[in-house]
Length: 239
Image 1 (cartoon, rainbow, N blue to C red):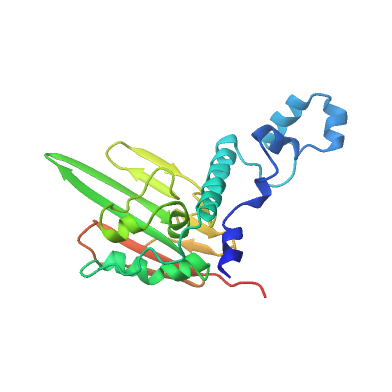
Image 2 (cartoon, rainbow, N blue to C red):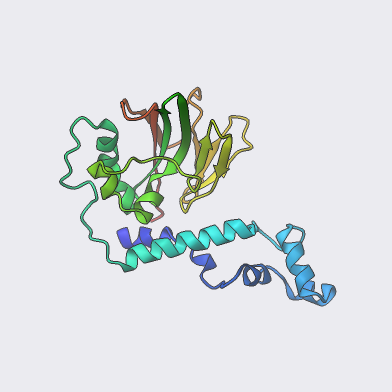
């Protein structure tokens, strides 16, 4: 089961493309080539969504997904020990890390996907630094050494590469999809996430009646952050 999910965590549809241009070429039909007679123009039309079928990635999205795939492959090739990163760690008095440890095995083997919302508030002298964001727990587990977090030597925080990131004082924001989730910023309910495996919506609006099908919202009491919320989503595998 774990090997199956490792394969699902990598977007194999991009493995045949060495460059963004070759990716665009794959969406150009022979009819397009015949009538346009200019491959550069045909690629531009595909990139703009005028030609071609289906969702077309931007250059930044294509390159990010390729980097993510390489990181996931590298982690697998390095024969990371099967022992859980949270195993044998003393997490006394650390409810957030306890919650992550409780979910680690299920998240790694694909039975559970968890989105972590963190709002962090720090003061340096008279300066306040506030950041917030949503993290794909599974993606981070596969691309980082989580023992540093469970050991307490590193603090888990949102980054501009996560599902969403907002630096309040600097007014910096970023939104990205991950191997497990797409981001929907156009919903009337505000920011939402769509699980790529079962296409279910995870509604992170705290005032929503429900976070969605097969999803549970859990607020974690912690002194380490201003706020931590977990969104546990159980996906249904096809038999």
